[in-house]
Length: 444
Image (cartoon, rainbow, N blue to C red; front, top):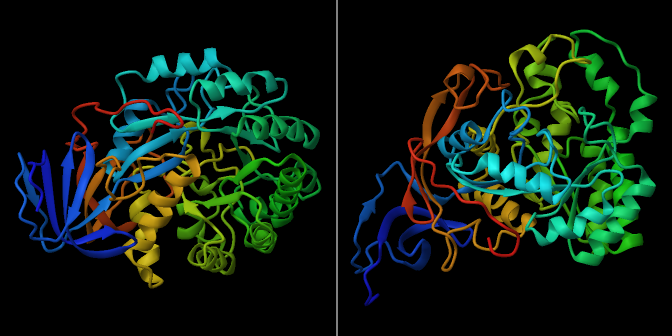
């Protein structure tokens, strides 16, 4: 029995703790999980919450791949709208990508500009990735010292001119530096050479778009990343894996002991190329959503640990940029609010439990980014807690989401699972008050 009162006690017949669902009470003090005990633990607290029979206590999701776009392209999304959407979907931590903001986060000055823009607007906790672009090798250490969680680079055109890609030689130069300072390089891995050699057919046909971004582009680029890891001794993370053809290469690298991690995204697990309507560029992303057979292999790779985590790659834009031409439309799926529900909807259909989803979307994503006090209900962790109703169904409408623009691939779909209540560092939060804080690598 705890002799000291808690600030908050939450009691649940079902809670995801230590990788499994079980009855539990969670005691919170000063924003952290202080103790975990049996459902009916004899504890006193300033406040107590008892979950209903249809609710499960889970940790907040940790989404390490969110394009907030502010400042500079704030009409696409902003910190207030993105973090409200995250909160509504059960995500309590996001890590912002270094593009498509203006300026991109490739210098300390740019990081400070972004943080100033975000100050007072964040409804969940927010961290920042730095950017790796040609010519900024000397900026990596200052950005690392300023607390960014690692560095993102592209091996192909990023879609915005202010964030150019690295050549293989430039990648080696940057990864020698990240190895030296102990930083993580996260990579958009598509090969420009493979895509340049593929057929490009403008127009609304989704099949033509997929053909223009072949599996070989991912396989070739991931091989470059793995070879560069061997040469430089650096750590790397593959962003938004789409192609299952790259899985044997990834498995071999992990068996070799290379410090490689890999993510995929809800849209690759929720949609298939065969089902995407021509002209539906809300589904356009790079790399693209591929076949049903490919999707099955991604789910299998999640189950066996080849793929480490699932994050949204929330990359919104204004509606006018989503023309019906797949070659020219902006590529990105707006999804931060629906990510948890989308993955849970697919996971339960395949026999996975909530503990699996928590592992993929909270525990492992936090570990990849080095978020030491996030990612699980455990003693010492931040009390980022979600009351989740796993059987409640929501009919998604783009206009009903907190996203700034009413465009999403999930429009008019029914998804299962609703975040009913959310605590951030022990405080219940809502979309009425911005309680998030900035996170820095190491202290988070």
